[in-house]
Structure formats: C-alpha cells, structure tokens
Image (tube, rainbow, N blue to C red; front, side, top):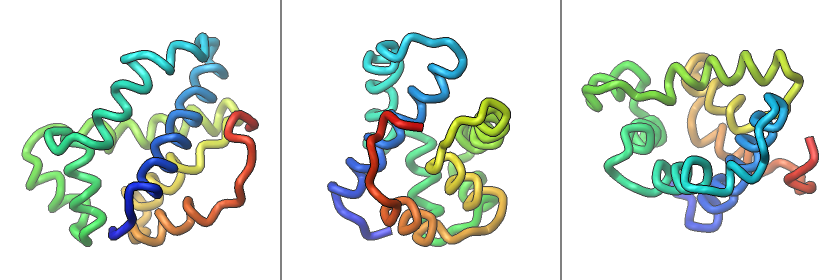
Length: 131
C-alpha cells in the first residue's frame, strides 16, 4: 500500500489493543495478550512473509481481489473467515474494533485496502485502552 514502518507499527499496536479489548469482554486476563500467544503471534503474522495472512493482505493491498489472492495462497487463510466471526462477536459484545471493521469492509464489501488503511490512520488519537 506504500506506508512505512511507523504506520505498520501503529496498526500493530492498535491491533493488540483491539485483541485485548475483545478478550477482556470475554473474561480473559489482559496480560495474556502480552505474551507469545498474543503479541508474539501478532508481530510474527504482521511481519513474516511466511504468514499466509500477511501474504494475503499484501496481495489485497496491491489490488488483487479476494478470490484471486486466496487461490494464489493455495491454503486456508485463517483471517478471512475469522474476520467475519470476530466482527459479529465484537458487535454482540459492544466492543469497538475499527481495524476488524475496516478489514471486513475490504474482504466482504469491496472497499479498497488503501482507503481502509487511510481511514484507520486518520482516526483521532485517543487512549488506546479506552473503548
């Protein structure tokens, strides 16, 4: 999409906050998300080219459509279906998850990935821990 390391870091940080918010709403200990199963997996998924989710997202960011990107990966992209399920769960629990919402818009509503990223990066700054 053409954004740099600062934008990527901002989205990773905000992603961790979203995961934590949803987990807390489900009764999880927020510290769980600071370990390997939370932050560790998030960073790996967002930075390693072996990640199917990352490769899928990069293809979408380069303008490829969802079906073509899935076919090119040739394996299950967990984030595709999980996005829909997480969105439903967050809505049911009243948890604000703007990254999940924008990804949903790209995957299921045809929003351009760059527009979704600009929407997220243009959000007003606030305390990441507030809902």
